[in-house]
Length: 231
Image 1 (cartoon, rainbow, N blue to C red):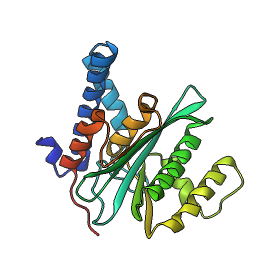
Image 2: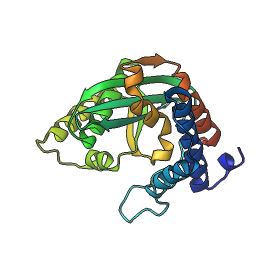
Image 3: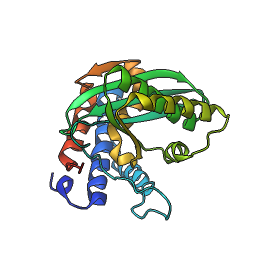
Image 4: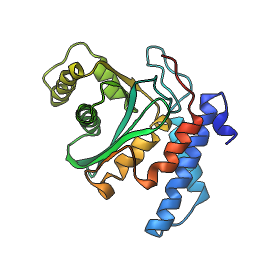
């Protein structure tokens, strides 16, 4: 609890990542009869942290290491995709308000696709569609896929399959009174990541003002570690 209330985002991210990995192993032990290997947990934590360096190269977007609450009257939707077997993906989404309250959660599986980047783009389009169906009009979306974020920022859109998906996404923007897409580090996207990787368990579910019991612990960690953002 003390680490989660630190002022340094890197420390909070490390604590969240460690707790997240312990939670993952616990689920494997309880539900899949796996075993706890401390060195494996530490190696996974090290791998996740080193993929999110604290120093951001020049020209790259500044990203958050922890989940942050959105401004008042804005719904934040974190989404992620889990690409598996080279042919299908699972999608996960969690929507929360400025108090950290759950507004909605969702999963989609299977999504036929042939690359991880396309899976992330499909996740963006799916999340925007869900936001409109749920009646959210002031939204900020977060992805931990830097390539997708950079593609979204491109002014010119070509004719590739990915460009077509991005074009579809841009057509949804007009449905919102406020819209933004930001890049967040994986440690700040843990709930959506969990839902995406376990989408086959829930398979095309939508929860309104609630979420699966398996992610409540992660959601609580986000709320504890978060600090209200400015307008």
